[in-house]
Length: 72
Image: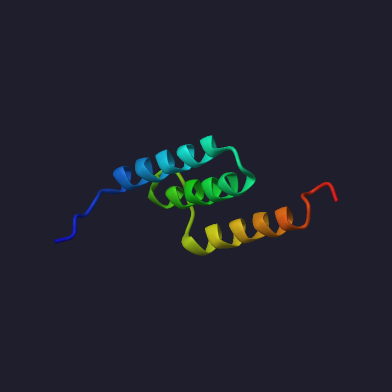
């Protein structure tokens, strides 16, 4: 039997996971934390976003990161 969670719980759990990932300290963990936190915005009533916007935003961030950052 599967359990369902309300949006507030989903958001809070995703943000807690993102915080834990940030504590790891590696650049890979930081990128993943940013992605997880961004996904949590889907469950935040104060955020106006959708999955496509999150995907495009994160793709852009990862591409810039792979190229060495904004200061290239």
